[in-house]
Length: 222
Image 1 (spheres, rainbow, N blue to C red):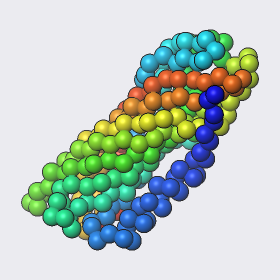
Image 2 (image 1 turned 90 degrees about the vertical axis):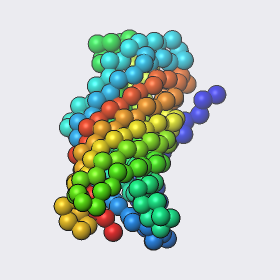
Image 3 (image 1 turned 120 degrees about the horizontal axis):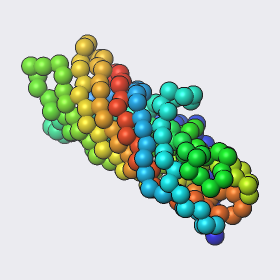
Image 4 (image 1 turned 30 degrees about the vertical axis):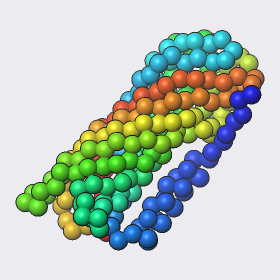
């Protein structure tokens, strides 16, 4: 029997912040905190439910519809190990995913908009050059996704945070250091999410969702 595993969004965000604060207080590495927003879209495979639905949701992102798409991350650069180009990040992303109701089998509401929340642990590599202020970087990682499942259909309504499954992440960007402690950045970030969640009437919903985003952000180094 598929059991619901509910996680509140504030608890997920608090977990990310707590892990970053713990790392900052217990390590001598260069630390960085970043916040970002941007343009996020979505695609993926068919949605299937255990009670027979099978359809193409024609996903969309609608980044700026409230609540908007956003994220933040903490990065530990490993300079204390003489590996200053390498870093480890904990990244929280609040993505948004809308299903096209014209493609659903009579459903009147279908969204993961508060949101498709992702928490990932990532390895980063930056291409530093002391003679310049801009620095390209790349990263790969994995973690979990926690969608806010919003489904309304003839058999019932689902409106809750659920544990969805695994999330894979890839990113590439460039940062610009404009002062000792502050930098801006632009990046591409993609996440592939395996989603398997309970819905009404004892059924479960499965799908894979790929979110892709162009992010603009600011970082504080300390």
